[in-house]
Image (cartoon, rainbow, N blue to C red; front, side):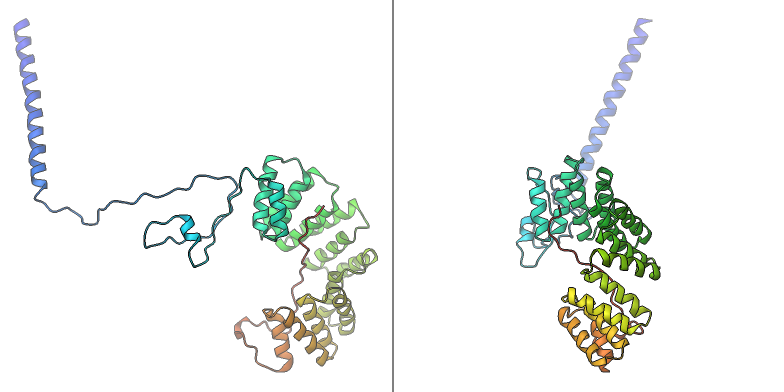
Length: 338
């Protein structure tokens, strides 16, 4: 039994060794052939390494940076190029978030302010003011949905803040969520029934939702608390314009212009009211003043051109039919609120 087994083992070992030798010879032959055969593709080349920036906290969205096609370049090279390039803003994790956020807010760099206050809210989430100023920064930088969420976060911590309810109403109006805006204004009035801003925001929300009669009544109430609110007088005048009441509209818009004379759309609405009353020369003066305040205001330019019988110098397809009523909006000061 022993001899046949050894003999078979030797045969097996010999076969394995022979197979290895054959494979090695085959590899050598192929290698020799490879030297005389052209490569399959000339497009195969070394791929340059891709630089990946290190992860940083609280990075704002950035515009695409076009690389320098003349050679490999760093982000710093792109920033120093002659053409202006937007780059990502990164919150310094070692910075004083509140101080940097306030500096950015006061400089009207609202996107940066939002990033700093978001970092502060993440580290210390229990302070209502932080969520409040974060919401304002997001609102002013166009992040409306985030702004609404942040303002609600502030109210979750402090449900007695009338200012938070008022600004939530402003944000919701800008989002087109008029029922939510009305709810916020009325919640503010539940905290303080005599608050002039909440009363005005109630009127504005009613107007935006289409209930002009209730909006007028709400405006009368708001005037009891703050007769100097030019935006409230503008809203009243706008309602009378839409109803075709020229004299009432003119009186309201003149009160608005007395209080906020540097706002283009208010001057435009005054022109609308005067035109509706038949005072065309005075209307032309108001429209011209609106264009002077905002040369890019197509609404006022259209009204002035239409009144003078001139052809407007902008594309006809952009012109709405009939008189143009300026869109109601507010511009709040950017000072840091309490």
